[in-house]
Image 1 (cartoon, rainbow over the protein chains, first blue to last red):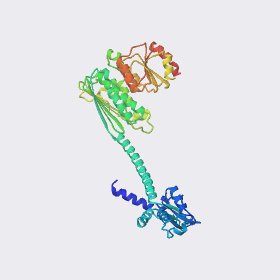
Image 2: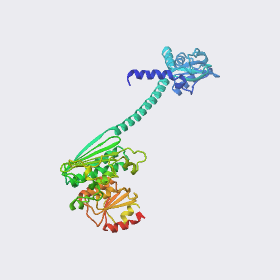
Image 3: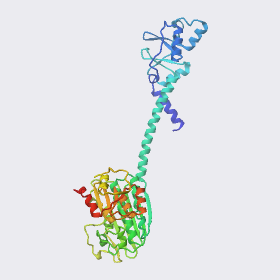
Image 4: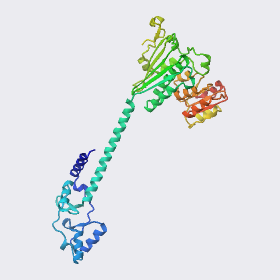
Length: 341
Length: 110
């Protein structure tokens, strides 16, 4: 906020707020037949600098601390208020805007102004301090309101950032590096949890990536895993440099494995990898060229779509799962093996 | 069945203790093949396995298993134990072979 905004806020407030909003209602007063000595006691006891003089329910005068000092000086402190009070009292009406009250204080240099209703009956008293106090309270309330709204907005913005930010990670995978298998999927899982992706979806995504990673470690001469997480989707690409899969459809068959005994002893090579990946991914595409390498591309939708049961997921799959026996003639003549896209 | 009951029935020796023994175990995934474990759609399960490598813990992490119990009192590698500790996944071992271990937990699937 700049200075002008500050000022306009204050001037708006002093116009909106009325004398009744800032005045004290516990009116401390004296009667015309009180003595100036009584008033001295009232002022001291209440630590105030003046009191209105009230008879019945009307305001008849005002006595200030200056009047008392004069009375003490001149020796008439024991006399009645009626004789020495100011009779022509400047008042403000209860529904007067505070800016007019402020003008009044500036013009007359009074320490206090009795506040009266429309019929001139006293209903309170107001001092410049009361006005300042009321403005402070009001401004604090407004500031808190602005702060609260700012925080709400901030929270919404950061949530938006988190969802909108695109995170990309790439991992190089060495052949035979069984010890480190799973680094990319751990990273993915952490990222998905950070984003508050539903746990069952995060689990599917991590499993798909883990299987892809172990495939590269077990079967290839090395490769890489790259994933990109956006607000709605995980896209991952597992690329290796060879040797390629001779028959992708066969490799997709659950239980079919070419893994060595050594690899199986480590718990890998159950022949479930590719079918696991396909089960976990919402979209799945594999392309393999013998002696060149395999590229596996998967997508997982991170936002829950209505009625996401398995049949729905299969229906949106890029691959045609109903066709389980594509002939060799389906494959391109250059020896590329690819599932139907 | 609570995790504490699972461990009791298996007379398991804890290697990496659990932080919560009251967590409800509803399934067991008994396999020496990691992909079989990853293929499961079960939730709230413990893994019974003869595998001792760190990949068992990685698989447990990714498939969100409650705990891993090694059968036949197999010795976990240091990597395995350290990974379990780092990820806070309870790890235990029991003297029973896989089949007996499964039988001891069979009424989970009654």
